[in-house]
Length: 313
Image (cartoon, rainbow, N blue to C red; front, side):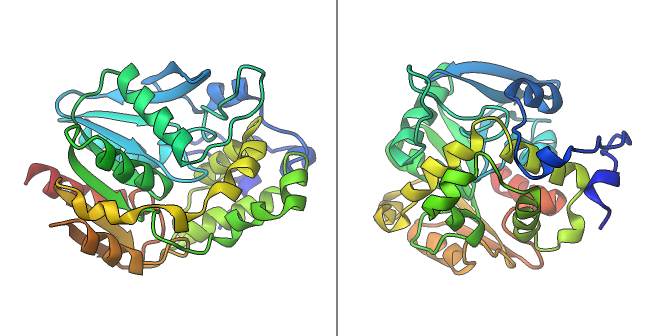
């Protein structure tokens, strides 16, 4: 794999070399700089719970809302969204505290803790702000948990549900996330977190790390080093206790559902695919050989075929 600092972006422009302080995570990437580098032609912002939430709303037709996973961003859907937006309205957003959006903050400036009740208030407010009534929900990892929980709470608002390597069942946190359960890591991470750790974590979510473009890897690093993000993650991770999540509610869902999973997912056990498909009445399921935790980013051409088959059925 090419060196991150000697590589070029997808458009052929060389990636600027990061300073030593930046590579060690001693400095953070200012939020305004993330806005400059990572907004897209269709990017917009909406004020939700005191934060300027970054989202992209494109295409027309029946709406689809896409929710990314932990430490990811709306960019993980780029290729899939571009395809589906040909005949659907596709809405993607950067969930706090990730991506361009960053952390939610209280009125006194303190960073909010992103637990499931907070995500519920956030996604409900976002849907209302954009005037989204009935929609199809597609969620990956943490976004999958938010998606199926929303479907359970708003039974007349979800037309179809797609879960891609979704969270929800009891599990041991991936080592790269579980690090933040250490008080020492939580205290030090906002001031020192080498990019080498983030590189290793991102490569770990791919089934084949050779497919990871240097520009994509750089994006993950800079978002993780974004202003306030590491502190927010330190507050968030200790609340990620999936033993307390009510997965029994899945048995009461009455919505066409599709479960997609990467066979080489090292973050959430592939056995959870069968657990979701078994709990949700009538759910379809598909396992992708050779793919990891984010199949829609690693092999979008494979995932979009199955999404279209499901959406058009």
